[in-house]
Amino acid sequence: MRTYFILAVLCFSSIIGFGQKLEIERASPFTAVKWENNEPIVQFENEWYHFQKLDHINKKELLDYCKKEFGDKWQKRFSEDLVEVLTEGLNYKPNVQVALQLSKDGVTKEFTGFFTLENRQRSLKYNRSKAVSKTKHLLPKKLTIVEAIEDLKAFENILDNKSSYAQLSSFDYKSAIKELKASIENRKGDIDINEFTNAISKIMSEIGDRHSSIKNEAFRKEDHKTYNLRLPFGVAVFDEQIVATKQDVNNENYSYYYNSYPNIKSINGITIETIIDSYNYRDKKAPKDAKVYRSSRAIEKYGELLFKNNIDCLDSVKVVFSDGITDKIEAFKLTSAKKGYNSKLLKANYSNMLKMENGDFKGLSRKLEDNIGYINIPRMYNYDEIEGLENEIEKALENLLDTKALIIDVRNNPGGGRAIIQTFANYIIQEKQSPWVANVAYLRTDKKEIEAIESMSARYLYSYNSEKLTDNDRRAIDEFNRSYKLQKTFDASKFSKPFYMVLHKGNKSYTNPVYTLVNENSFSAASVFTSAFKSLPNVKIVGVTTDGSSGNSKTAHLKYSNIRVKVSTMLSFQRNGKTLDGNGTIPDISIPANELQVLKGVDSQLNNLIKMINRGL
Image 1: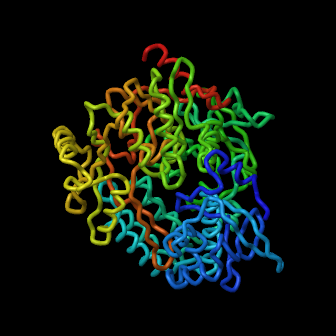
Image 2: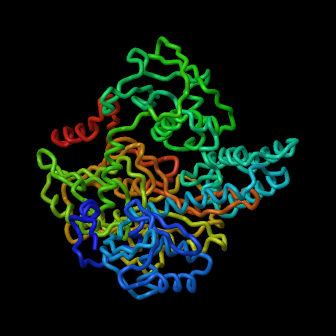
Image 3: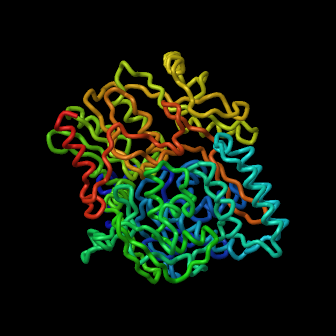
């Protein structure tokens, strides 16, 4: 039997033994599965093999169960949910390490495989790419005027009956849809689906639902040459200005494209302010810092930005650079090469995510100079995604109890689930503040959305009379509600009664100051994490306003175009009565990224915070 120790070292060297049982459901020993004559061909170690057996479970036994239990989704369940199929269907809980019997060119061999989250994610990505490849040949590229109007009616119905933020927003989406409908009716020919997608995307963006999206799932950027055109230099943000950058020879650090004219003033006669406010409509309602940051990412991909505005992109642009007083003009040929800006801190965060997903928790925590504790959370993982993570976070907090201050770094954290919030609450919340009402949310109550109440409990949100809340919790809610006031009103008849996330102290409390370090790229559940602990007497939020958002997304497809519409069905409010969406969480202490951090990757935000702590902040 061949044993692939490389995988073991990379993925599980510190946490698994050969007989360890698999604790997570979202894992796979294969990186992809394809089908030939209903037979599974699996990708293992970058090679394709016919699957024969996993431990003592043979192929026939597995496939027969999948066909019987899952109908026309049997192949999908085999490729994406193998752990669940084995445990719940065949009553067999495999080890992390499994024996695989695979064949190729008529030769059967035995291998040792490992169930990992990363493998399953790659398999999901492969399935999605194959699905898009299939649908693009089946779906029309154009809509008739009648079809477009029918889909527009369906889109309006989704906003009326499913969207939460459409009910909170002051934007008159009905008038916008009516105007789009009139323009379609005045057309003489069919409507391009991409053009239609972009038009309703603009309407959706005005509502301010940061979890919403409009997507033509049959779209392939490879089919549109100008879509892939980019500026031949990097675009970053410094001091709230959009700046042009270039990489140094060693590809590690950056400098301004023109040192004397660092700012980008306009592109092809369009001011940078107009590009931020109008062209990058997807982030129009983001908090200011996030809006500028995300616009910088969009400007780099100039061809895509114009495509999403239904504007033809030429192969060259004229850029005006400025120092704020004088200008410099230069023409550039666009390129498909990726010469953009990539923050060192963002790359480090992504690297930490990959390590954590592979069971490497070395970068999770450490003691900094002068006895300051530091914990980095690169993503808001659910604990069933990564075996051992909950225990590692608890150990880290235990080991840092004797530090004089604790820094929790959630910069560039894209969000996820809320389980990690509960763990930190056990240590951060003091006895005087427990129970602590951390978040209030309302759910759309249309009949089709009633079942979504279960998803609220997955977010640790419970109604006032829920059995999950104690009488002590309800007293805390009553006290909280005496001074709590929503900053925006909405039609209560279209929403549930409030749901509350209530946090509690644990057996051991961290009694020294806590600093949550955030930036404009702290999103979704990371923003919830930030706002949940804000205003606790021992907690300070430090950095830049988060890109706040908190949604309970649902999807629907328009009948004729098959465009996917995703909207939030939940309104989520901070303790100050403001929504997370559009507002974010404002730091108590502002520490923006300085020039050294933007260009050279030096973590000046963290360094400055350490200096402040040592000065007795």
